[in-house]
Length: 137
Image (cartoon, rainbow, N blue to C red; front, side):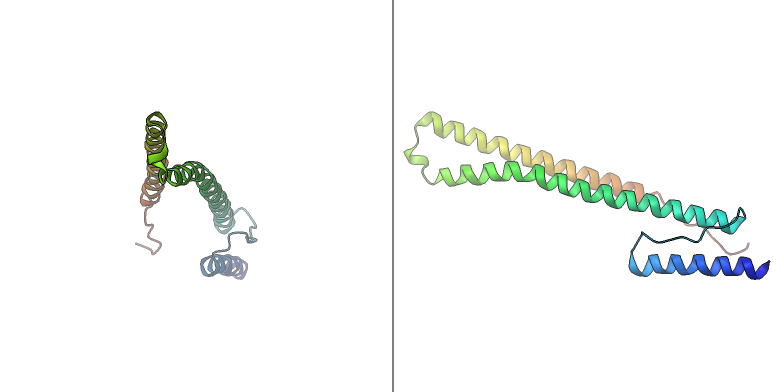
């Protein structure tokens, strides 16, 4: 029985070390039995699944943010190119251009503020982790 338990722990440890060294979360976790080691294996497997979902969500957020930021940046670039001819524009068009530039700058500021807030919230969640002592008292 001790050999079986030790073997399960050694296999679980090898998987944990593989994840730690490679960062690869898509690994097969050796989960067997209903004992403490089996529960530990299932918990580790669940933790890897949550990390995988989190990594996927983070990728999607970055892609969405990139898409959202491109629109006001494109508009700003267009309006800035028109500024080279600002003296040729009628007063109303100049005012419209300046208003549009100000609006795009506000939109970019808002998007960046949202991204910073998301990053801060995520770091606050990570900071709530607690150390667990494994040695015997």
